Image (cartoon, rainbow, N blue to C red):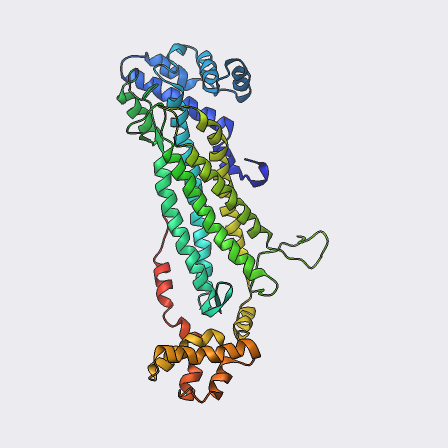
Length: 432
C-alpha cells in the first residue's frame, strides 16, 4: 500500500500494529481455550491477556535472528508475560495463527469495502432520480442510437453496484474463516473444541477440512470479486471520460477552486479522477490473477502464496477502497449539462427516431423489410447529404403515414414512457 492511494481506515486494518494485535488475540484465545479444557492454568491466560502488545520494531529485530516472523512474535510474546509463557503457542503451527488472523483482517477490510459500496450506491441512486427526466441521446458502438435519460444510465450503475455488494458480501463470508487444527489439519495436538472457542469469539467460521492452511480458493474468489467491483467502477469512469470529451461535453468531473488541469494549457479541465479509477481497476485485475496462482500449492502447503498475499491482499483492498471513495466524490459532484445533452440529441438530425418510424410503417401495413429499407434509404441520405430525417421522410412519396403520426415519431418523450418501471425497481432497492 503506497501512501498516495491509501486511506486511513483501510491502512489501519493492514498496519503492522493491527496485525500483531490480532496475532496476540489469537494466541490469547487459544490459551483461554486450554484453560477451559483443564490443560493450562487460569493464571497463564490472565497473564497473556494482560501482556503488552508486541512492539513492531522489536519484532523485526527478533525476526532478523529467527528468519521467521511468527516464531519471532511468539518468542517476544512469551517473554513478555509474567507467568505461563510456556503456554503461548501451545499445540499450534504458524498457520493456525496467521490464517486465522488473516480471516479477521480480511473480514474487517471487506466490511469497510461494503460500507464504501453502500455510500456510492446511495449517491448514484440519488443522482439517478435527480436526472430521471434529463433526456439525452443513447449511444451504441459510439454511434447515436435512441433517446434515453441520464437517470436511466445512472440506474444501470446503481443496480450493478447492488450486485457488486451482494458478490462482495458472499466473498467476505468466504474469507472470514480460520483454523486451529495443527500442522496438517488433523487436530493431533489441539482438539476441535479449542478451535471452536477461538473462532466463535473472533466471529469466524472454521475451515471444514484444512490442511496446514485455510485453502486459497477462498482468497482467489475474494480477489476476483474485488477486481469485478473495480471493473464496474471502470465502466462508470470510462463513460464519464467519454461524456466529458470536448466534442460531447455532456458531463464534467468536479473541478475545485485553484485546481489546474494542465501545467501548460490553462483551459484544460481533464477527467483525471476517472482516468485514475480506470488505472486502478487494471491493477485489481492483476491481483485477481495472482490470487488464482496461489490456489495450487504443494501437498498440505508451501509458502509460494505468502509473498503474494502480503502484497496483494492489502493492496487490492486498499486500492478498491480508494477507488470507491473517489468515484463517490466524482458522481456526487458531477456537473451534468442537460442543455448540451438536448443539443447533442437534436444534432442527430432525427436519425435516432428511425425505429419509431419503422414501427409506424409496419402498423400502417408495410412488411418489416419494406419499412426498414424505406427508413434506411432516407437515413443514409441524411448521413451523406444532410438535412433531417423528418424532412426526408415528409418528402418521400413512398412514406404513406399521416403527418401527425409521422411527427409523433420524433418526440423523445415517447421513448421514456415506460421507463418508470426501472425507477420503481430502483426505489425498492436498498443495500444492507
